[in-house]
Length: 291
Length: 163
Image (cartoon, rainbow over all chains, first blue to last red; front, side, top):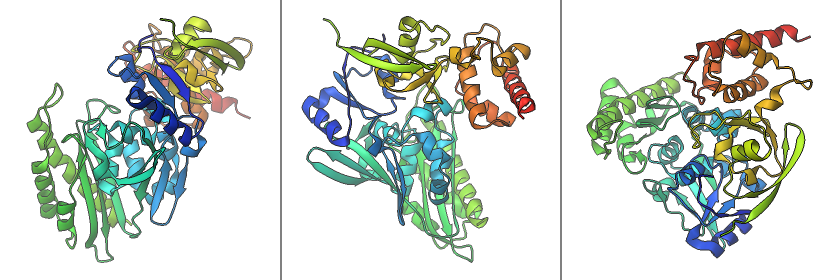
């Protein structure tokens, strides 16, 4: 046995999970898919006194398609989201990003909420949440609050979640524009690894081919995934020609604060950020033009 | 200090197995050391290598990234459960032999589970789909080519034998 000893509780409901968190405080940790947490416990990077298992809470496993957003229960498996055609038609970036997330075996178990709460700065789903301005519902015994992604992600593996809160669901905006295109791309050592740098973009065009709405961002380029709403705003009204795309990507890369590690220097990551942001914008543009 | 033990009951390859486990016992350790099904291999023990792949409720997952206590009430299929009821190897397993899809055999149970999961969902996979399905499983002997060929051979054989 590699993990340090802990006590286990299987929560039957979100209310029960919140009560257990309130009772055991900082020593308790929620486990959803466990695809990061259990590995970290095996390495004893984490030694929770209590593990509160939310996998059996059926109310946390759903995809609800609504007019302006798709709501996803925190414990919904990544694979279930990836396979959902109706969802992919409304929030295509999720399926595009999930193709880069781990492997089939990890996506069969890994959850949407778990990836958001783990908040790895190079992870794909947090980047999509940041780019689209997804919102998360955080519940405790005292009640629920809703936070936008940019308020939720606080730093590397750090979120606004309080020790007694459970991430209950996430809300992903649906763009109603008919000519919407999106793209996700990244560079990693091997497919399925965390990205060295990742980029996501979503664009809407009018009948004339002019951009009416834009969003893009970068992962692995700072302590949290980055979105660039001020730079995206400059794309609106343009035809997204190469000079415009290059300038937006260059400006975004200049705003990154990447770190250096064994795999890539900060300078190389910043270089990649510009390249990948431009690729994502071009691919999203092509997808929008094709609609 | 004695650790709390949790009672579990798991359907393993169609048979109900019960046990008393500490919470930190991984599912793969329970399957190997308590249930004595040693076909599933332990590799990296932190979710990278895929050797410990099993099916949980019919879908391939990593048994080192689950605690045994979490499998309570669920259905687990190990590599032993892929064989035919009379113990003969399955078409997929036989195809691994035929196409030399293994050398040392350490990754093989994980590869078989990953490939079976693919064929269950997609009986006629492309080479790209096969490579994607086994992308989470490391093999240091074969260079993967013969494994891909084995899965392709199995798919063709299953198709041929279908009514």
